[in-house]
Length: 66
Image 1 (cartoon, rainbow, N blue to C red):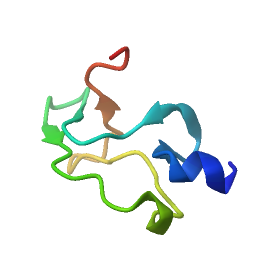
Image 2: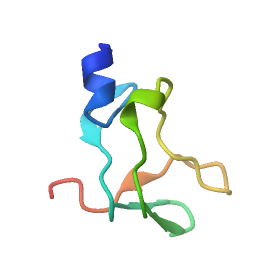
Image 3: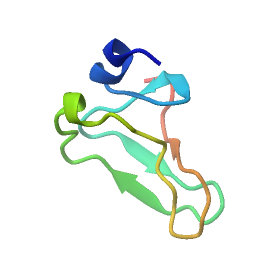
Image 4: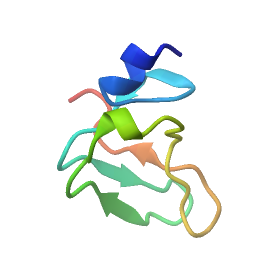
């Protein structure tokens, strides 16, 4: 992925996913949920990956369409 894609808040490995303040991520296994309070500086996030729940399952954005 290009550095331009990372700077816009996209996660590595999933060019469709972006993170923004207030986004919710949910575990499909145990229904654990996290909310992004503050996204931070995208320029410093050179190895962003999807969140992993404490049960080990990859978390997904709750409202992927919006």
